[in-house]
Length: 494
Image (cartoon, rainbow, N blue to C red; front, side):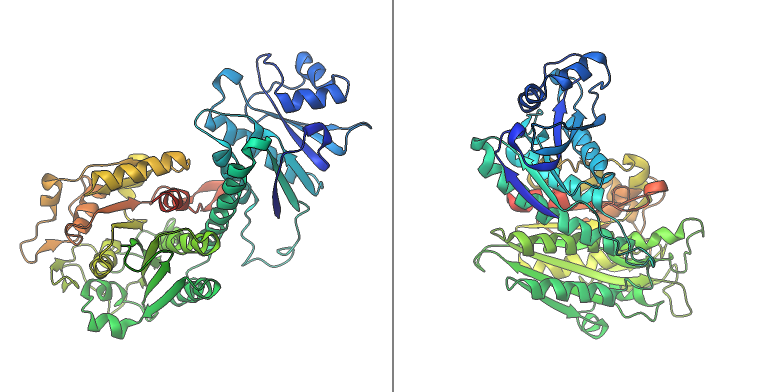
């Protein structure tokens, strides 16, 4: 797909599919739509007056075009009430427009939805969101399919239209949207791959490819021998039950002087989680291939960094292994020593994500980060608490937490902050070790974060629990690529 920004008048736009906004409840036609309507003798106004097109957000109507316009089809796109034109309605309209276009064989399209001004947006935001919407809607996972998996789409070129004075920020937004969209696509591909393909070694291969694509990115891959030297006993306890070798990936993006403290991203990379000896129930266990979506997020962010090359330094750390039961697997009641020297009583081997993350967080402190953010499909409790709408956010820094919450709101990739505190931390007490790896049934998302907080010391830190937002179930089952938009919003403005 080729993307462009254009300032051409709608009635002069040469394209196969001309996307024009309309509002509901008898609102006046938007400027671009009104100009085209005059050129075709008032047909659009007639259609709206007759009620053939309601204009509700997400409504679409494809019209043939008579002579007089340099386009083949007009696609009317409903934006809802003009007085209530929100970002939500804008996104609904954009997604509907792209979906309607994909159903046609029209190779090119020009959208004038980006000329409108929903609340909370500017030209940069509108084109960025439009590009991200295109990637999200156009994504198909065909890697593991035979047959027509390589069938080419008919859509080849998308033009986003703005006024002359909006062109510069719109082009910047488009560039960022493309980079973020590519990162999201990579994260989706990794999440959707089965566990027999997307192993820790496969994640290392993808990281190598990203590092080779941009001289500002370097990669170090640690194996289990190096982990033993570093005394990563918590990480090694998780991989003890599988023959698949664990990997510990360290990516570094250098976009500023070495003296500038980096942002460290830590992504949970359990490429398949059967629960270990604390075996999960069989229903929906196939979805545990998504337990590496934190790792996929970090790789997706680095894919976007390689494309966009912003200023700033970023370190990406991915502890990756499988969690399987076997005769060598860690047992409930075992006590292990983490890289920090703190001992952990493992009461549930299915609470493994925090065990690989705690060693990764300890390792991450050597970079003296300005901020440390871990991303993990960590607790089912977060799914129960927040559903699939918002990512759970917890941390020890109000400033960092607020910046990430704001970034999520701006990127339409929302999060919600949950509390920490001594009362929750006390649930991790153990009679036999420095701490237990679970805190009981109550407040599971919070106690998991309390566990991680014990390994960050005074470093500004936020934990993102993406158990509810990293993938969908049902007819649209698959990875989502969240929270890459949130993180890229933060990094681009850090």
